[in-house]
Image (cartoon, rainbow, N blue to C red; front, side, top):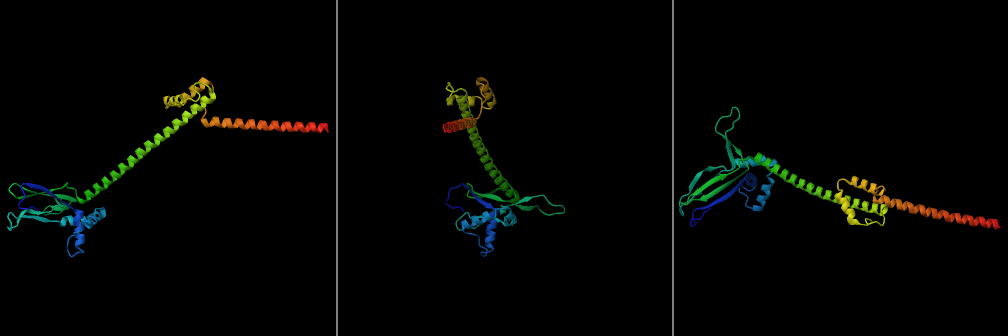
Length: 268
């Protein structure tokens, strides 16, 4: 790991261990005559496939099997010296025993750990293991909860922003509808007045009486003594009036033709 000519102290250098990666190596060893997987992309792909809850037994077995030792030579061609004891980076001891169980504390598998290797001022290696102490089951639950929380946050954000946009759109449509309603009212109740066709005044009234439109309609009805209607209701009345005028014109034409016919009959 270290060159003899390197300055000291050096490090710390970190090496990550995961139960899923160990399980991937063990699975590959069963089909490759005991050799570990060297293809990094294939290793990452297999590691990701073993991260789910279905692969918990495989990851636990692989984590409990992982052991290694660290050796160092203090001189070129010198003897290899073991640094510390045998390490089990993905195994954690706990003293809880079931009823009737005896012997030493047993191990539980953990999901991940980090090995730190440093070179001190006198050129000796020092090692240390860092882990959060989560078992594989706990880590799987935490990952699942984090995933649900992330998706929940995304869905909430979409609904919140979408709801805000929909609310803004609906309020804008209502504002425009009420503005047209005020303009149509002034056109019929106060034709040729100062407010007739004044869109700025209409928009100001609608904004001023936002949330209390009924008070605005009552105030207009009291002032002009004309009921407030929707813009399309005024258009319907105008269309009905035009139809009545056309019907009256047709009746008058029919009446004139009848009188002419009666006059011709009298002459005969």
